[in-house]
Image 1: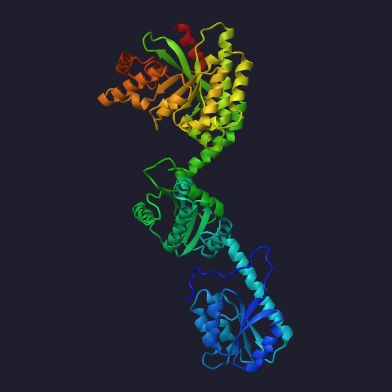
Image 2: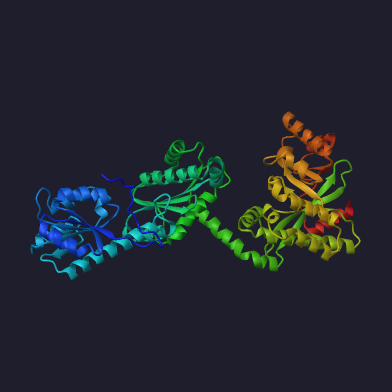
Length: 564
């Protein structure tokens, strides 16, 4: 039996076709010779004198055969038996068969059609009819094979994304009375797999997952949705509960070609079949995005709450331009206090979104969203200009001036022309570069090879650089030595542990290390007098946190500067 993996050979684009092969299965020698002499000018003809011999040739040349001309009445194995036995093999059954018969029996024709014959040629032969029907069958078959090749992913053999959209639409309509479920899969860090194990192993991972998903969901459609993403649409009663899915996904990972294969799954149960297929798939991937940064959870379900969150996010995205235009974004300022004198020595600017009615959009609702979609670059620049203009106003009014640091997101760091624009803004407002330090988060600076030039250009222009959130992620000491930071800000998560022996020792050693590198040390998120006293004893330079002041609007901040 031919294996499913054996594919019919197709003509490659740009190649000149050789003669197509035709198999003639006919017991009458004269008829074989007549057909052969007529067809051999256009085709390469293979001959068999009975069905048994014909099946043997079919198995040997199935890759190259375009059509079989089959007589019905033959010894050893007649045409009916030939068709029955051909049908037991999945691949052989794809080779079209035209039945040749001198009988006018409609029952025989119906029986042949039931067994998979595609057309009939009456005897005696009319060669125009013979050639016309052969050409029609070959043209139809090659069109179907070409479409099939385009519809299926070359590597994994499952549906491509566009083919999935079409067939899913048909299936949803045909099985409208059924419950449908969607499972999407996204391989985590697939580029790392390719770089670590090689592209060949990466391909094996993709093929393994495609085969596994196809076996798991025999009643439905499987697609390679993206380079490292899969979509499974299935119908019927299915148990996709968390416990079941955990067991299934753990088994998939255990049998994978590489150890520790991590795949995120998004599940949309009992889908709304009135939605476009693309929207249905988006809901599955929306579930995955909700756990994208959660290393402990690999399975998420689409819920109404997620949909509401998506609608809310789209609303915030749509409002962005008008909010910038109408100056709904503003900077609040959280003072930084000298640990010894408790005088204000600086501040950090923090973006706030104030609605026209005075209510606020929480930073946690819009900052991560804008970081994902890239709008944060424009917002970063807006706040930077806001702070520069604020500093200019203070200078013009002769009020006390302290450095006000501005946060720069990791997205902005990699955006072309940021340094030049920020330099231009400082020059336009006519303020000293030293009064607007730039804060970069520790995690944003891990890839120091790429940002070394960026940070050096900022420093050379005159900006001071603060490393923000130190200790909140993967700390890289090489970053401290290679990048030109002059201030290190210890993250609140470490300050919260300062009352414990180990926590106190960590903060103490960070302070000593930073001072040894010639850096100023600021403690963030300080909330109690005990924390202040401990930090003062350790030699921490400046303190920022609710103990002294929450972030304040500009008028309140100015008042605090005047009182200091």
